[in-house]
Every structure is written in C-alpha cells, then in structure tokens.
Image (spheres, helix red, strand yellow):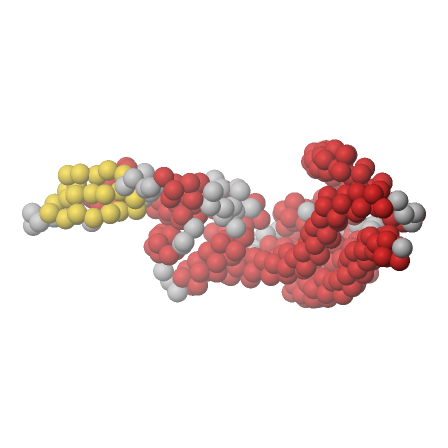
Length: 400
C-alpha cells in the first residue's frame, strides 16, 4: 500500500511525499527511522479500476522464478536480505506480488526467519521452496540454496511453458473443427433441407444422415454440451478424492504414448527435486518426504513414501525403486545405484533429471508430429464429408 505523508525534518523543513508499506504502522516506523517527525499520514486512495486490476492479478510461476533468480544474485552480492527484498518489491510490476514481498521484508526485519515468513504464503511458495530456504538458513549456505531454487524453478518453468505451447496448435484446430461443424449444422444444412424438400429430388443416404444428425444436434445439442461439462466437473471432483486420484493417476500412466511421456516428466521432477534438496543439505529421508508431494502422481507418491520408510531402516534407495519397475525405469534404478555406491547421489540425480527433461521435450515434439497431421486429416475428412453430403443433392438438382 502507498501512503501520502507530511513530515518535518530535524532542521524544521517540511517534507511531503509517498511511502510504500503493508500497513500504516509500518509506514510510520519507516519514516521515523529516517529522522522525520510525521504530522500527516494517510493511505493513498487508488482508483476503482486499479483496485480491480490488483484484485485479479495472479502471481504466476514466472513471477516466482524471476524473484528467486534476482534474490539469489543480490544475496550473492552481499546485499542484506531486507534491502534486497525492498529493492525487488520496488521493481516488481505485479502489484499483488509487490505487496507480498514488502510484507516478507517487514517480517524479516522484525526478526522472523525468512523461511517462516515464506511459509505464510503457501499458495506462492511451496513446501519444497520453504524447506530449501530453511536448509540454507541452518547450514549457512543461503546463497547456494537460492541458486539451487532459481535453477530448479527455471527448468520447471521452461518445461511447463513448452508443454503449454504445444497445446496451442491442437486447441486451435479443435476450435476450428467445432466452428465448422457448428456453422454447417445450424446454418447451411437447415437451408439445404428446405431446398431439397421443395425440389422433390431423391435424397442420398449420406445427406439424410447428415440432416438427421443436424436436427438431433440442433434439438439436443445444448443438453449434450451441458452433460459433457457436468461429466468433466464430476470427474474433476472425483479426482480430488484420494480414491479417484489413485485410480485416474494409475490409468494415466498406462495410456499409450502419453503414459510414457508422463513418466518421463514425473521421473525428471523426482530426480531434480531430490538432487536439489540433498545438495541443499537435507537428509535423504527428508528429501524423499518433500519430493513425494512435488511429483504430482499418487502412484509415484506411494512409491517414494515407501522408499522413505525403507531408507530409514537402512535399505538402499535403488533397491526400493527396483520394487516398482512399472513406474521406475531400469536407467533410473541403475543410475541411482551408481550414485549411492560412488557417494555422488545428488550429482547423479541431476544427470538423470537432465536426461529425462530432454526426453520429455523430445516426447512433446513426437506427440506434436503425430497429432498435427492427425488433426488436419480429421478436419479435412469431417469438412469434406459434410461438403460432399451437401453438394450431392445440389448436383442432382442441377442435372434435372
């Protein structure tokens, strides 16, 4: 929040300006620390449209990635954490995120550990994030922890951005297919039906089928679309339950092509999070505990938690992974074994993560190489079939 103020300097000179803080009390404290005697302090009223924009400003993964990278650079340059946070707040364009960073700086300045301040915003900073910071605080390697986090988040952001980008083309093609069929069913085919009925020509079977389908969709299309969205809503609600997530996650991994692609993403995420946490100074059991919630699939979560329990008993990590060959590939198991034997598990896991990230990127390219021509063929056959069913009776009319 911004506050308009009027104050007197020690020399008696009047000073007016604007100060940014999360509350009136904090703003007053900041001004007093500058040696000012405050005579007027009121919150600057923002226009209604600005408040609406701020209300709907979402803090994205990109915002957190930039924040982490810039903070790691500033902390590495020996700038104090409070000062670094204030500088970042001043240059952050996202008003919602700026307010959160200011509150973080105030909590840290008040003596609260940075990890505890971050934990107050779990919707922005994950348990993984706060745990890495806590490990850095405990080991005195805060700069290294911030660097690990920044690298990890950048890789996650790159992969998620590429995945979202890959979905743009199929979405456009599906939208085009829907638009073509909608125009045909609601405009062209009803007019064609009138012309055919008035002419009295014999209607080909394919045209009859299209006319009947058009009439059915025109009458019940809204119910079908509504039913489809209700089904998606119920499926989403079911997925939120433990039983639903277990069942759906299990079958997603068995899908042809997509199942293998999902496995590469999950293995990459697991390897990188484990490597980052172990490098940050956490015990392997703690790293497994946190990684179980990061991977994002219940089948992997159960396997990772099982590995955590067995590692506590002294069982090697690779031996536990070998019990789940359907979700852990031989390469992953063998590389984990090599890392354990050589004492370089964190470096080995990072190599595995890099390998599977490249595999995931190649998987996206392969899926697109199959999906793009398939969608074009579907669009061509659908539109061509409709045009053929329309042109046949028209050709008969012209031949009379």
